Length: 186
Image (cartoon, rainbow, N blue to C red; front, side):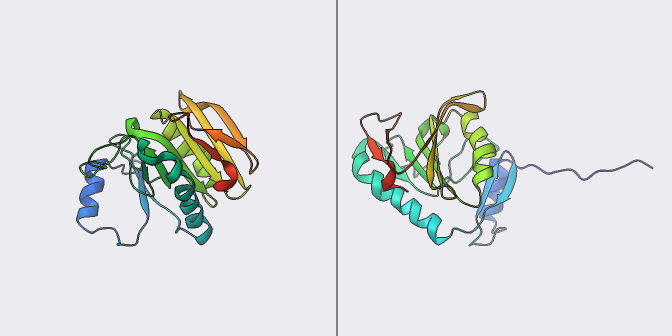
């Protein structure tokens, strides 16, 4: 008798989109395609949603027309990954990405607001974003009430990682003239 082991079925963007168009997923489901795997994401709680709103409120007046603010929408990283980060600053695009999802090359800043997914955001998401050269990745850490800033992607990690508190501020890598007070987003 030959032993048979269950095999994982990985999917790609084309199949993922066909499943969505066919209505396979319930309308209120929260899912992401990460490295070929369909992952069910936790529902968004009040604190999480409020911090996404804080990010938008704090950064919108500082950014003006230099970038497009996008929240909880997909980015296509490759044929196997289409995550939906909590917050993005994207390169300006005349059509506001109405004809395609943004790619990694379009991302100036990517932010995950993290409570129940902190470990996942610090490991798998960090590696995913670093592998795709996202220049700046923030984790709004709701557990420890801090901002984790990752910069300089290289070989699946970030060379610069700093943790900031409410009394700190920082300038964006892609838009160095933009300075944000951490207290505005925590």
